[in-house]
Image 1: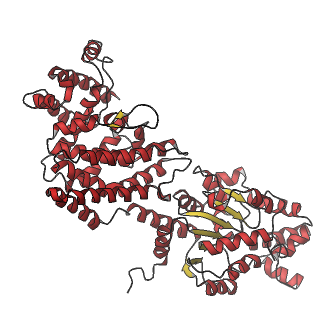
Image 2: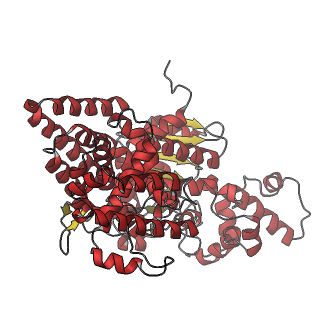
Image 3: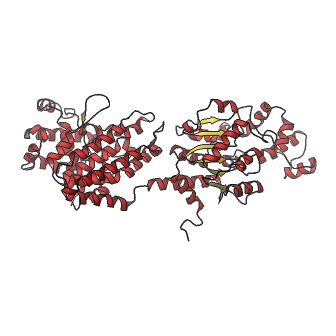
Amino acid sequence: MSILAGDPLTQLAFSVYENKGVFAVVLGSGLSRAAEIPTGWEITLDLIRRAALAQGIEDQTDWAAWYRKTAGEEPSYSRLLEELASSPEERRSILHSYIEPSDEDREAGRKIPTAAHNAIAELVRSGYIRVIVTTNFDRLMENALRERGIEPTIVSSVDALSGAEPITHSACYILKLHGDYKDARILNTEAELSGYPKQYDTLLDRIMDEHGLIVCGWSGEWDSALRAAFLRAPNRRYSVFWASRGNLGSGAQTIVDHRRARVIAINDADNFFRGLQQRVETLEQSKRQNPFSIELLVSSAKRFLAKPEYRIQMDELFAQEADRLLAQLGTSEFEIISQGDADAFRSHVRSYEAATEALTCMVGVLARWGDDTEFSLVLDIIQSLYTYAKRPGGGSVRLLNLRSYPAVLIFTAYGLGLTRATRWAMLHRMFNAKVDQQYGEPQRLIDVLFLNIWDGDENEAFKNIEGFEKRKTALSDHLLTIFLQWAKTFVGLTPNFELMFERFEILGSLANFEQYSKARVKETLQGDPRNGWEFMAFGRAAWDGKNRDKILSEMQTDPFKLELVRSGFAQGDPEFIDLFAQNFARVAARVRWQ
């Protein structure tokens, strides 16, 4: 038996996840019912009630039965609207009161976006849904999107269609087949819905042909023009999923049979779309490369590194993995949206980490067991990732700055591997290696990819990560958490990984501090300890006094102090290390006060 047997929602989630941007949703009035916006049938009964009461008829317990007995026919939404209002403008005014929320409605949580609308908006923001077809007049879907900083392309009339952004260029395209309730050109009578304008039919045919479909809240009975669009679509390249409460009607069943759609029994639209969005998010969070594949790549790197005659194969291995990473970074998964809120930031962080993990661990192997000849390869990888990240682009500045996160991860892994191997001269060389800039002179790696001076952590962006909201050094703490797992592949057994991690960070701080002259530092340190210090990059050691004091003491004591100086640190001057330690202590005191 299949593990997904009896779980069509998870099957749908896999289809949506694996075919990002392919699926469109088709929404009917049932989706808005949870917002207490009445369906067409409910509006019909209420119009019967109001019209009858206005004529002096006593209130009835079953207005539908009363209408059948009085009029001799079934209640008809279309006929009632035609009788009560002779023009589209008058019909729009009648509908307005049923859809537009009053202050009382808003206070009570009525006629505002539901959990279903919000879940769909999240799928749009993540790039999984790009096209929404709806028979609803209301603006709940648009409002849910705008609350997330997404401005959709909205087509609610033929005029709007002619001037709209092409569907292929739109981040979110909403086709409101029946119009917008604030536009007098809404379609809501049977005659008006017997057929769509030719332009709509052409667009619908394209959507039906090029997209998978998720139908929810539409019975398949009302709106013969939409039903006809489903039935004339010959292509079944992508699946159709039909979410239904109870048994399908004949109209829906005809469509399901024709399109070979998969029917998903649901309790309501809220739980359906919320469940779908949560499953897709779970798949996204678990999308790291197959652990076996990562282990295989790391093992291959170790094997090729062990023998000089495999140097060509090793270079090819790293080049292939770097090319794979760059290709993945160019997919829609990493598109920059206009508003990078906390959820979008967290999602991008997870995506970058999942994509970069294998190459990061492979670079750590080079650092731990390399012989200095691998340095140019590592620098080429970092430069390629950094250059790609700095290409021109628009959207959220926070997410644009985050694009260099893969380079930060590679830089950190190489530094940790060198620290573990006590390759101090190569560590200092890495800190001072320069990367080209799009504008201006090349800059040292330590000045563009290290902790709080990296522009990806501007305004302490990593406090958006769950659990790190109140951390003083959220980026440093998050990197420690990541590398506690990843570094097992190249660090090996170490009695105190946290101490080693902070040693790497403090040595990075020293390299960054080397931008100042000894004379300037001396003069600055003569000032008031509360503000007499030079700015420098720092990580968690600024508040972790136990490790900080141990590492700084170690650095100020022979033979480690002399070893660092011979390796190029501290401008080759032992006294500079003492000045650095004094400056670091003052910075740490300031961090503790914050």
